[in-house]
Image (tube, rainbow, N blue to C red; front, side):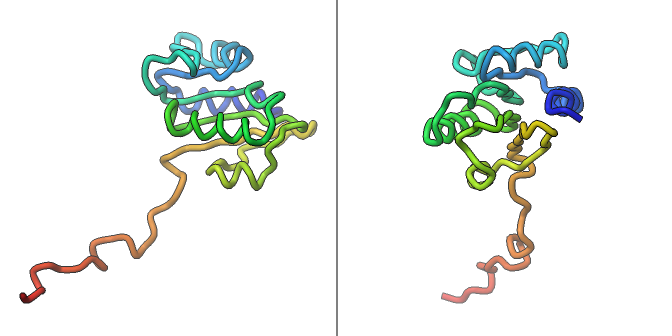
Length: 141
């Protein structure tokens, strides 16, 4: 499966209400994969979108610029981000992992698709439940 087919399948599976395109190629891909869905530019979107998509967004950026772009998009634009990293991308796997992205797909040409989803970003640890919380009613002054 190519990276494009994988992105189209992920978009069709998630069926977001609105998509924020980070570049022109992402806008074209979203229009083909999701006919009838509102597609906004990430820079001019009136409100946060359900999903942000970047195909050529990282091309030509150095590592610092790419990290700033991805951080800004995941914090302010959309809670779910799909981004394509071509072989010349300034960010490696460790940098994507440090930003909270997971590797969703890789094709034969070395093009990678990375995904960030706040819903699956971190599982809730077992110790973080009411069983281990303090019980104020047991405290004596």
